[in-house]
Length: 283
Length: 158
Ligand SMILES: Cc1cc2nc3c(=O)[nH]c(=O)nc-3n(C[C@H](O)[C@H](O)[C@H](O)COP(=O)(O)OP(=O)(O)OC[C@H]3O[C@@H](n4cnc5c(N)ncnc54)[C@H](O)[C@@H]3O)c2cc1C
Ligand code: FES
Ligand code: FES
Image (cartoon, rainbow over all chains, first blue to last red):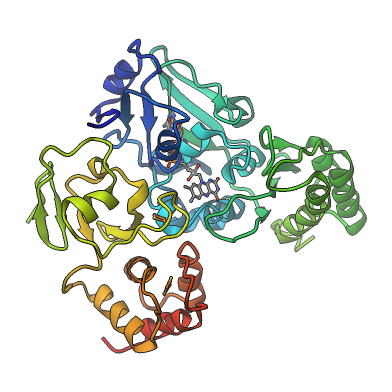
């Protein structure tokens, strides 16, 4: 006998109704299942019912007035295959490409990555640097929240009871880059990673770091050092030195504090150099 | 023919799933329910790629996929004589390049590469194909012969 019953609601309302039940533990939500099935296998969660999102109409990708909206259940591989994503959000493409393997990305989703909120998520740092918003739908309707407010700690998010991630919105195309360090290039988790993006409308940088507990974070002071365009060498050096010096860095079984401290500056330097700002050439 | 919504089509044949528990993995359905032992279990955690099959043409880790989630889908595995042109081409390339020793990883590599060729076409740069195989581990060959098989699979005439 299956330890859980799999439900496949046809509509969003049905899915939310399933989640409102009083089960303890609560019904689990399944998108690609690449995180959830391991959690169930390892006994971290033991839901009696699992609500599959596969029939919901959320495998979407739309560019509207320069903004990108991605439905939560679109596979990461489909997102990666969109030529406009690679061209307009190169850092997002690099971050997606860094997740697992091709076969994993055929099932894994952006909604699942946010729902898991792993400290070592490769997507959360880039979504932070792109000022992405999460669109949630629940019994009370639809609401939007910045990724920074949505992600709290490992497996902890701002998702309310019976709420689902419907999609993610990225407000504008941004020159951007994502650089990571890990033991094995594929199917391994980043020990530390840096996302950098330049906003053409605000004329400012955003920098985020991921790969370590408790969660990926934005580094506003570091970003400020980079100034309003392609930074000159002293500005770039000062930003990288500040990152190595000031960022609160945790140690865990995957990397020591010292290792991460050395790498954060190096990866930031590489990320910034990889960003091309239109009309300014390479920094 | 459209597959029945409560079953699968595996290598062009209908497979009934009556009485299957909801938590069954595609890997177990293939190996134990259907007796198709070509697909291998290496890790069961998504790390090794040995369990790779195609679901509607897309490479998929069968160990991390609930069978119910791909109901109605078209599954391609290494078992049997395939009509699938990419699969035939890749199998021949692995044989010609001698790209295996124990062979445990081979079905996963072959399906992963066949999937890449379907997705990206034979004109895809060899670097991209090799990059796309990073999720597959081999403990025997040292990879050199597998790299040759990838080049062969691209270049061999149809
Ligand atoms: C071998 C392997 C390698 C990996 N490598 C990486 C990597 O390099 N980088 C990386 O970032 N991640 C990696 N992962 C983790 C995982 O694949 C990703 O986090 C993936 O994006 C999860 O998506 P999913 O659709 O499979 O999630 P699921 O497993 O379906 O869901 C994950 C969590 O989010 C919840 N959830 C899913 N969708 C929604 C929704 N729409 N609304 C509300 N809650 C939802 C689920 O309930 C669950 O708690 C790896 C995993 C494996 C097994
Ligand atoms: S058995 Fe599925 S990836 Fe190893
Ligand atoms: S041939 Fe033995 S694992 Fe690859």
